[in-house]
Amino acid sequence: MPSELLPTTRRALLRRLAVEQSQNRVPSLIAGLVRDGETLWVDGRGSVRTEPPTANTQYRIGSITKTFVAVLVLRLRDEGRLELSDRFGDHVPGTVVDDRPIWQLLAHNSGLSSEPAGQWWERVPGDTPERFVASVDDAQLREEPRHVLHYSNTAFGLLGELVARLRGEDFATALRGEILDPLGMRRTTMEPVEPYAPGLAVHPWADVLQPEPAEDAAAMAPAGQLWSTVDDMVRWLRFLMGETGEVLHPDTLAEMRQPASVDDGAEWSRGFGLGLQLARHRGRRLVGHGGSMPGFLANVLADPEEATGVVFLANTTSGVGALATDLLDVLAEHEPRIPPEWHPSTEVSEETLALTGLWYWGPIPHLMRVLPDGLLQLSAWKGPGRTSRFRYAGEETWIGLDGYHRGEPLRVVRSADGTPAHIDLNTFVFTRAPYDPNAPVPGGTLPWK
Image 1 (tube, rainbow, N blue to C red):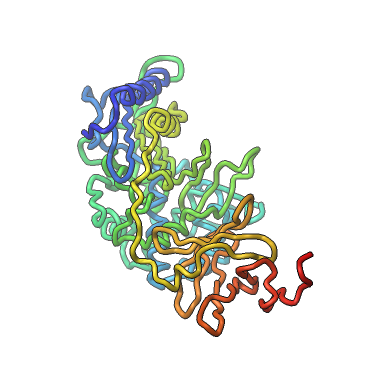
Image 2: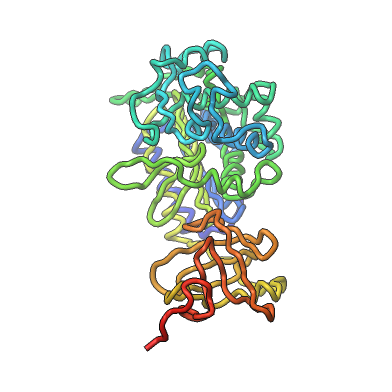
């Protein structure tokens, strides 16, 4: 166990975990924290068949499974096997969402019912893929605007079938070969493997237990079938924060983390990217997913900016509250992250260095600087304004990566002597002096008085 945390921090984390387990009567509960790619802390309370839970004890993780499905779909896109704008029916025909783009199913705004047709799917044996697909008919569509967030387990059952058809193998095989094995997540499985916690329900008015069913969801497995451990979920947290290895391009992960639909409640504090839950908590932007199946609750939340993440796994049908965010708060309060040391760069070209400094958009000063990763950043010099990063695309052109100028070209226009004369940012002209009369636009303005 790593020893970086102070004893007072460990005690505060343990107390929060113990309060959750004791007050909410959770049979067993285990949690972990990761920072800068290292496991900082793992601890558990309660027991699993008389033994304390460990980082190797399996629990069912429910809808966290959906994050793996989303990665499989995005891998297909990156390989050119599909586009997110494709009609779903172009790949899996015969459902009520034949005309909906694939991305809407990933972002939970396709209008599909939250649950599939038939009996309570989490508690009965699952259907075959063929029968499941045929059941997604007109009765499964909800009458609401397509841009509204409506969480859908059904959609992810369909996305799992999409993966299976394009790969020519079942969802479980694709998952094992494309994600779990490459990331070393050998304790993440479709069925439980010892040691594992049994799914339990706690009587609401007495301290007695009832075992919960652990059915094979079959065609609905992509919505919530997986079992996993704290150790494996820590690896998945590192993935969500950018350690994707050869599994997914970092730009694709960044795309998945962008908001695609928002829960329009009193505050816009949560929503979805492409298969990932997004949340804002005390100034942090968190990404991950919660999970529940009969007898189990789980959550993984990552803060990519702070390179910090949390996981908890519990074998109870209900009762665990805001434990994940509370553990992040305890860590931040007791031991805030120390930023990495700054080191100078020796790899900035003279051409790029010549673009740095103040530029004027009309009379408004903007600052261009080189970031440590070699990107350019353009931002307002003072006060609010538009900030974007740009990646070099060749031939004196940079492409916006985020903000207002995402996807827009920034072109360097040089004077006769080769020095940068002005910047053309998708027709906006930035000059070295306010309203430079030599610039093409606005150009020719009256003298300053």
